[in-house]
Amino acid sequence: MVRAEPVAALYQQGRAHHIGTFPQLEDQMTNFTSDIDRIAAGYSPDRVDALVWAFTQLLVEPMKGEGSGSARRAPLNAGTKGPEG
Image (tube, rainbow, N blue to C red; front, side, top):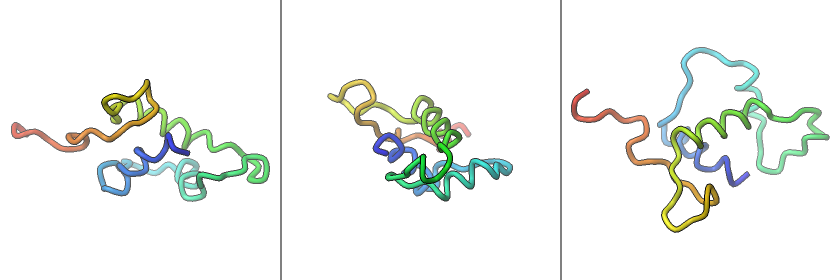
């Protein structure tokens, strides 16, 4: 899913992580592929979907010149602290 790519990039860059354990979410994350067949898999990755929507709203900025949410990038300051702390 194109929508999940910027969020996946945050994890790949080490800019996103979880505190605690979330076994059902983690199972869905490790089994998720862009071509998932929900019927064949027997479930919908609802937790991954919710995570992607939440990260997109909180941490991913729209790219200039693009429509609402059609192309997004992770902000440069996501997960970093400023000079004060």
